[in-house]
Image (cartoon, rainbow, N blue to C red):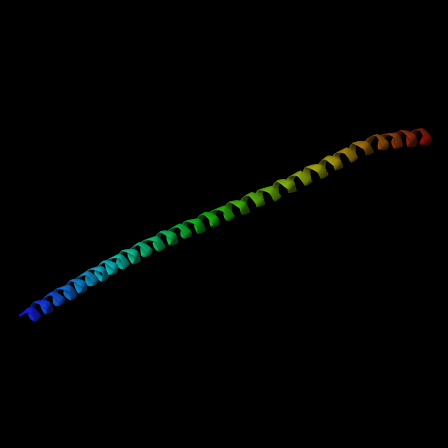
Amino acid sequence: MVEDNVIKLELKRVRDALYKTADGVVGLEKEKIQMETAMRERREEIRIHVEMLRHQMKASDTERHGVNAELHDRLGRIDKLKKRSVDSHAARLKRPLLSNDVSVCLSVCL
């Protein structure tokens, strides 16, 4: 009879330890599932953010190319204006010389 009680007590102790361990395992499994879900959600957030950054980079590149093209266009216009200014200035400098040449030629020829 005492042996039966000792066995029952030992069985209860082992059973309680088993249940405690099983509860711990179930808790860990639940935590693992929650972490896996959180990781999946975070990966999706990161994927979306990376995609948004790619779109922003593409838009920035497009804008940069446009600004670069406009810069080259303006630099070309500036060069043309400088050339026109130089040509105009040179033409103005040549006019008096031509007038002097004509008057010299007229005085010599007459």
